Image 1 (tube, helix red, strand yellow):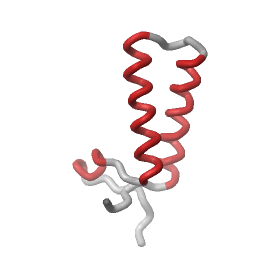
Image 2 (cartoon, rainbow, N blue to C red):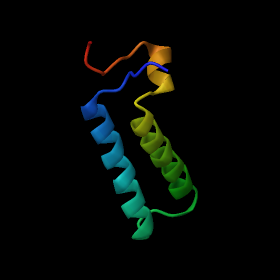
Image 3 (cartoon, rainbow, N blue to C red):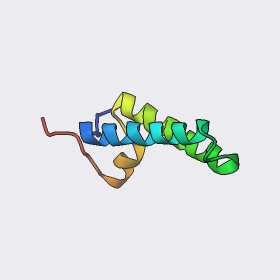
Image 4 (spheres, one colour):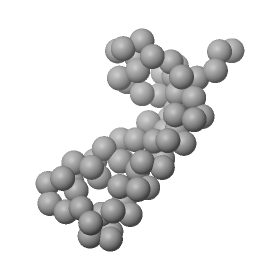
Length: 67
């Protein structure tokens, strides 16, 4: 897997995942919406950790700095 995520992209994804987690644990979101958003947050965290987003590959997006 070739890295295709830049640092700003990773930071935004982690922040979104944290906001989703806080909203869930505060009880602001619940039910099916909460489950869908929690799964999305987990995907955001995983893609941030491995610096690779499969959707970016499909659409030809690369936010990482050029080498």
